[in-house]
Length: 274
Image (cartoon, rainbow, N blue to C red):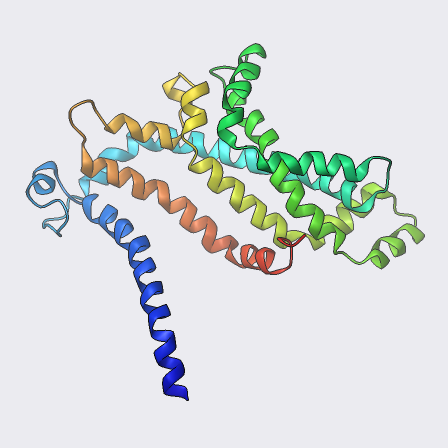
């Protein structure tokens, strides 16, 4: 019986291994190319070539450090703004009863069905009319506003699952709604808040379309746009380009390593259930 079960699981294991290879082989190849010179890449683009060109990292760091700083500023600002505002809205939807609450929530959630590409032009027109084009606010404000829908969707379900007895006990002791939010709602929501922070940072870090639309100053470009400077019209400097991608990946790896516990807790705590 045990042998038959293992035989049935063998195709599943093969499929999982194939998916893992599809994920990790490009990453390993990116690291491999980052240690090659142009001559080594032209001679053998996929194999390992010695000696390793560590100067690619030394050469690329001064070029991308400013872009990396811009990306950190955008990612942190957008994540904090999105999570804080979404927490307030979700708490109101989950813990307060007012006329039209369900209808308003459905109107907000219905925006999840709108593809981001559809809102690209209206967002650009709005940012232009507000005079924000070419500024950091053109990156931060629209993305904070756009992240509210998914954040409210996640957080409302989590806030509704918190025991009402905790809030009733706090009200008996004289706590108002603001104290209930800051001293009960937020501390108990750390897993889902951590999950939402990681999701927002990943989305901002990998965003390339919106920065290309609203930014024109090289000093304001994030990493995704800045790394495109290595791709020229007829030639691409592959070694430094891949070194830049490796450097750009390190902060995300560190972030997920530090926040992985909260991220997993948020995903497994029922926050994705409605």
